[in-house]
Image (cartoon, rainbow, N blue to C red; front, side):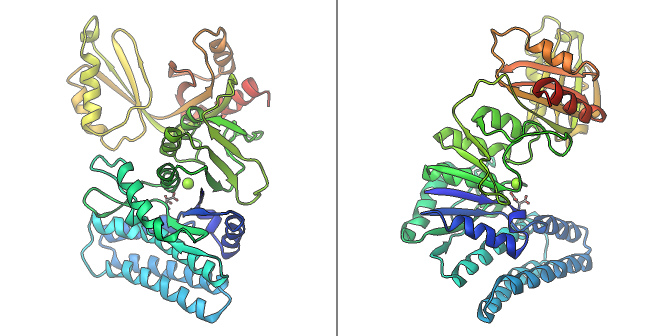
Length: 438
Ligand code: ASP
Ligand code: MG
């Protein structure tokens, strides 16, 4: 069995949806994980914002826009009147549900329920279309098996047992359709795996069922050696190790949700990144093998904040870093990159929601400085501790870029540079020339 996940743009029009059907019907038995249709989750987020601000009429206008989009979509997708009617009915039931919150109470719980409707609609329409064309298929609800625990981490044991139970009566079905992104939380309420989380759903499902491979289908031919939005000449990398892929996904390659690598890695299941617009292209395969290339790829992540703490108390002291880290832990703020000297430590974060509170507490430990608008440029490859000269190549390539921080040696797969964001494009272009001769 395989798991195939398709993103929103691959479902963006009835034509594209039919393209997906052509891909999945060639498989023997397959679980198809779908995102919401492109634009839908953003629209749902915006409806929630309106409701949050008590702008109910704005919310209604946005619901009407969704309704118009889906009316046209259903008319174009189905050929027979009976299926068109069923399609309209199905969409209406979800939109009426969303609309009920414009009259009623609206809290964070309702928000999660509203955000879930995008995937519920896309999977229901997809399944209905498979029925119209007589494909053997079944729809299962992720809300019946996908679950996060009280620390918001996926509950692998729960997922495995409940998914197996759901699949048991469906062994004769060829295409099993389910939602990405949505789940229940430890209280049984509707929740989600955060934006872009459909990839994560796919690898959690693949790992739970120990499938032969997991395919993530998007609009690009796999992971590239550099950011194609910023750099002209880039190429698709045919093979990546799990560690390389995780670093690239985390540090900016938008094609894959960073958390999604780990479940597959744990079970040794290959992840393939494929292009729906050109299915015959090889794409990228991610597995446990390392090609031992020196430089595999570079990626960058923006909106980084650096915080430096300088304190005479750090000199020859122990326990200082623990105090610093505890503050970030209390504010549930992950740290990306750290560099230290004997009297100072610099830390970067990308979620600065709690920066005020963090700042106030760090101030009790020393002199604190905050810098915004930074980018992490991450070079991924194989940097053996015994090799000479890697640093020379990198620093020489980046000789025209002011470097704020460097993280070298934390892993053998990643060297990261923190720079001001205004230099990012130049840094990526220079690295393309210096490391890949492009
Ligand atoms: N629909 C969700 C989002 O737009 C999840 C996903 O697409 O992966 O973030
Ligand atoms: Mg995505």
